[in-house]
Length: 114
Length: 110
Image (cartoon, rainbow over all chains, first blue to last red; front, side, top):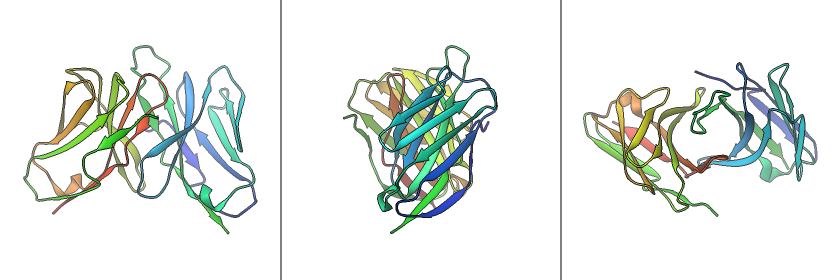
């Protein structure tokens, strides 16, 4: 079952611009996470936001969460060519005993042109 | 830093073969996961394990089995490989949040 869905599927910007990616999900969650994947590599965790938080920052990353709309956004400011990657949101199930099982979206492919 | 190591980056096997994909983590994590990643479908959970010898089916377990005899090692087994199992396979481990991923095994079944 697909929980998170990212939008847009692909995004191309110039270096220095901001990039915004969105994620929508269907059921109640404990937290939402964002991961990054460089081409041909594994996923790397970027940031986690809990269901009782509305906004979180980490360096050039800003994540928002709107549980009433079941949506999240990831903003990357002052993008660099090295930010070129696929970005995935992942949600857990609110129900207990999930053993931290996550459901991932299909990802947004971000291309930052030098 | 957590290190999750998958035994092969690229693997080519033939239809009908029994295929083993190995994953080892070095952080004493209780939870380990196997995903497959296909274009347009994202990551889908095949199996996960929350303790030695414990396993649970994910969203797409058909055609796969797993083994976890030691805490640090989680194996994915394709009992009789088929062409529709050609994919990128990703292993992950966690103590809670977040999950830490290996670099993946790109498996081709001919």
